[in-house]
Amino acid sequence: MTNEPSPKLDPECYDDYKDIPTNNQLPRVIQEPSVWEVWEGKTARLPCVAHGHPSPQYYWFRDTGGQLTLVDTVRKYSVVDGTLVIHKVSVADSGKYICFANNSVGEDKVDRLLRIRVPLKVEVVTTKRVVRSGEEVSLNCSMSTAPKSVVWVKDQRRIVPDHRIRRISQTHLKILVFQREDSGIYQCYVYNDWESSQAHVQLDLKEYLLNIRNCLSFDERTFDTVFENDIYNNEH
Image (cartoon, rainbow, N blue to C red; front, side, top):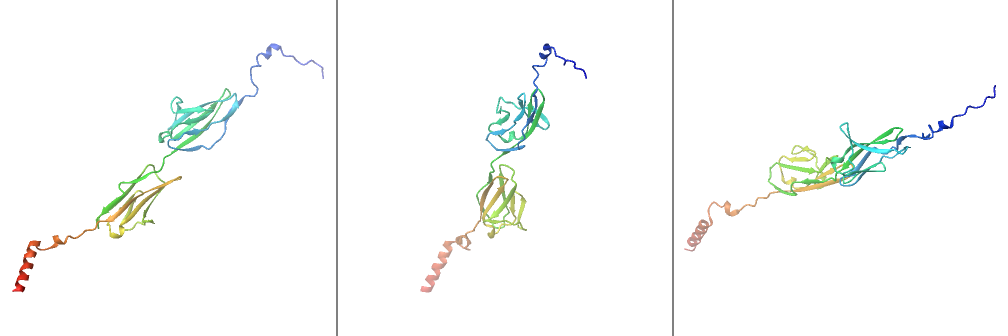
């Protein structure tokens, strides 16, 4: 073993390496729930927080059918510390968004799916109808968004379809031959994962009042004349 002196680097060589950081890290996005649900008209915040060195920059894209479009932060969108902020969301804002966290070492990305909750509203054409006996009746309820389930109720009892009452679709109920016992209050209840709503219509049977005068076989003047003649003959 020889005692040779250790090699010494030329001091000028240090200048080539002093600007190269030794603790660079690839960005790593913190995992969060991938699906975010926000009520229509509210503000949506889709988080994207990444660790890395140098500090990463964030770029948000919208995925429309596999095509990525850079989010326009000039209008209703803004990016705050990596979080995408969407003001006054509408159904048109629902969909898939992708966040890219990038620095000089590389990049990482994360997907966020935005769903817009629309307040559930249900309506019927009219709240009261008068129906003739034997008439066919169609009841329809319309709603602001597709429900998870629809239940029809009459006088607080769930309707069971039969040969006279048919359920054409979730929102369409048909009474083939209306009878007196079909009178009452019909309610259309709609449900989804977060709320419910209902609308109602009252059905009444049309009653026919007989006009006795129209049922007489002769008019009042004839009746009066005959009646007076009978009285005169009896007195004489």
